[in-house]
Length: 166
Image: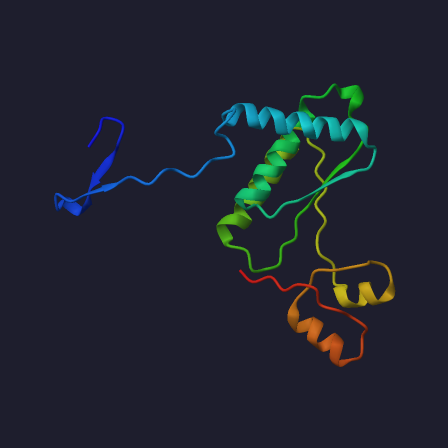
């Protein structure tokens, strides 16, 4: 085996197997710190160019927390005079969240409040998504399959475009 080849002893058998190459990472070229700074620069540019409120969907999971952290970090770096557009964070308790995540969301909300980040949490309402969509107040909605099925049985003109399973 040459000096440039790497091999593993398979389960102590003395049989060597080549180590698979790592998959290319999004951070390979520039490193994570530079990629984070580049994404924050994009967010700041979008914030300053558009006066449309930003909306971040946040569940408290790793992906939405990373997204919210990027938005928050980017906007926090702007001059206070530029902070004219609201940023809304939408978090919905569907009553099926892991209790650890639910506790984390509550703790994080306190943290954002202490950091003077104006976070708006839109709590769910008693309105049925299906009724809101068929009334014309919304073009689409995310709801429960059970309620959707009942709405179809009642003759509501709805179309299901996706079903998410966890």
